[in-house]
Image 1 (tube, rainbow, N blue to C red):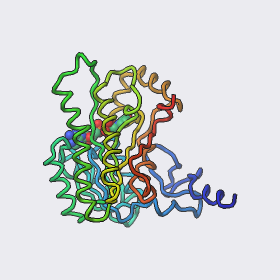
Image 2: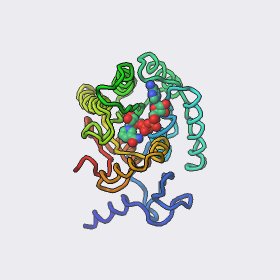
Image 3: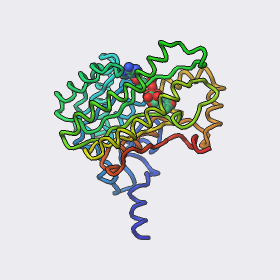
Image 4: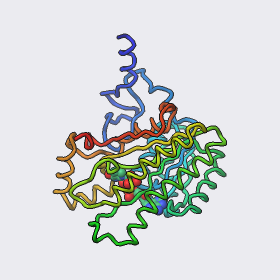
Length: 304
Ligand SMILES: NC(=O)c1ccc[n+]([C@@H]2O[C@H](COP(=O)([O-])OP(=O)(O)OC[C@H]3O[C@@H](n4cnc5c(N)ncnc54)[C@H](O)[C@@H]3O)[C@@H](O)[C@H]2O)c1
């Protein structure tokens, strides 16, 4: 019982105020302090780890970068389609790191990378290794979605979606493993979706759902292939997360927002920072015996 009480003190968030005076749990701010004197388990720390995130200029990819910085990461590769966007986000993350970590400098580089091109992914990993010498945690977040009925789906869009969502995740994981195996291992996280497990309604998006199911099984398969070489591959599957982009879309369609909320047992859509704990867990030593697994963060959506 005494042990349980100590663990609870370590794990539970504070109900008071965080390090910079913001209330704990307020969307937009990731806080590192817990109850007075309590510290997160050291195995959750990203200190000393080189992290790389694809699709990181905005949306969930950007939020994953913030979660790493908040957990002590000081070496970060921010990959996205347009170099200027990747670089701008790397600069924003440096500012965030200063505000969050005080004196600790963040070395963040913005790198152009189209994940649908194997050569582009290889070049981005080469740049990352040239800058940091290694890579410990890789998140494949780049992904797209279209809404068309199966009969109306244009073939070029269908192929582009699979090139990015499926082949892009594969190229990213493969380059990650090539870099990680000689250094003794690392963590790869593929961002799938609750759509890997359920069929979203009312919007039509069959190829997206199938692409995310493919990503989920790809992770299990690669996990088995690389398990003995120290490369762990897991999946993070978000439910509906209110990124800036989604907020804009839903502001024009309040009915759709209400429908999605009503289908989610917790009665709300997720905030991107609701994924911070899960991504840090999967990329840190806290999950070192976990591979080929999926964490769903969906407000209970897949449970009904
Ligand atoms: N937002 C959600 O509700 C939600 C839910 C479940 C799963 N997901 C998944 O999370 C991931 C991120 O989604 P998001 O909501 O942040 O999307 P987003 O559109 O906000 O961001 C996606 C990022 O990927 C980049 N990108 C697009 N094509 C690329 C390419 N070919 N190469 C490199 N980068 C590319 C974009 O430039 C953008 O910065 C996707 O895989 C998505 O399927 C999102």
